[in-house]
Image 1 (cartoon, rainbow over the protein chains, first blue to last red):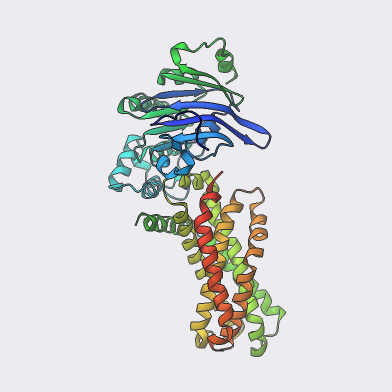
Image 2: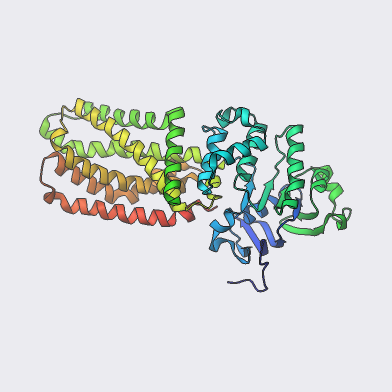
Length: 241
Length: 225
């Protein structure tokens, strides 16, 4: 069934989306429009629905109710078109433990149909400073190095929409700094960055738009400067996390 | 062309992963040979008896070895949610299925060669005079079994009791392939002309076509959450 009102012509959009896991509603009537070049910080306590929201946007989860749209079309009517333009970093690394970082990236590049693969893989490895360990099996790398390889894999195909679920997990200070610089730079290059983190100050310093979630609902969606932090209970959330 | 590249990439990836730890093939071969070894003690090995016994024995060994292989095939995909990583690419899900199928077919073929060699030794039975038709029947039966095993391996990978669920789901569906394979193998080992068991071979061909096409088209839904 087509959406009732006109969707965004470009970008990602959720319209009245609900998603259930058994009796649990992970998302309830969520509406969100994400335009090209935005930087959006998704914030909320554990179980708020952040991960499900990002998984729905990246096509991994199908809404039980409502519409997930990519460039105005139902995302699941042509998921390949959306997947070609989306890079997603999850809690899981999506990497094969028995393959090296370079082999994992080459495999991903082949599946994305990329050309000049050798050069692109080398550039992605260099961006996240893992060239020196690129030929060791992933399972022998530390969590931080695995996370860097995960980020390199997610950005390998130069996606327009970069969705990151807790991307700072396991990274050392230098890598965090590098990733923060990248997240600040990408929107200026016409890329859209949507990320979640439990560190509110860190997230707020990187994004212009804040989406606060609780119990599967969007509590606030707007410019960071206009967010009523006290009434949203964000200070309390900061203490919880 | 991109579809072929994806199929090849998945196939090579599975071979490379297997080469690094050699768990799947080793367990398939050892288990298959063990079945043959135990049956050797349980039954007479006179040639006439062997001809009655061998087709069933071979397919029991192939079936059990296959279940181990299909389970292992998707164990690597569960780790780090790698299967979701494949889903997140624009690659045709059918091509991902075909790549996994090709790798499973390769592992099954290697295990079957080892099992047949063991049978040949212990049962003092030469497969060489009937190798052509035996290979045809076994090849078709294996393709049908792997077609079913690969898609059910992917389905059961997302269930809690996956090691139990795979044979429970897969064997009932694969029964027509097993029956046709055993009947065809019996004819081939007896040196009968193909026309005698052509109906069983035709059934195997139909089974392969139906399950290859269905699995290719439906794998997209198997990959979904």
